[in-house]
Image 1 (cartoon, rainbow, N blue to C red):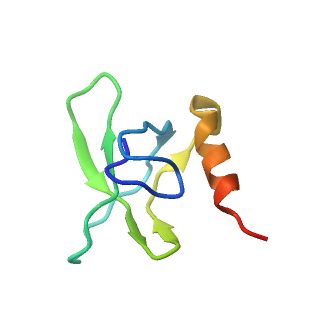
Image 2: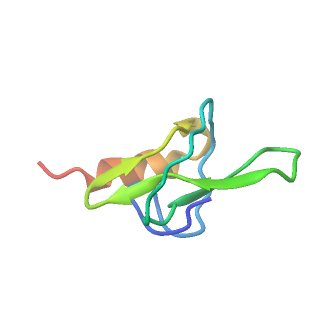
Length: 78
């Protein structure tokens, strides 16, 4: 779930995917999304955005939310 607007969508939008890695990052930046494991209460915040860069571990599954791919393509300027 997106915690703020970014290239993937708007605050509150849900993005389907998998996360294979995690790490601890020491920064003053706020995480941009919250990961929730299906069928579980486990969740954590991760991902960072700075200017036009978005970083994080999730592997996005675009068939789970085609709007995410549209948002990425709409953000590209030629």
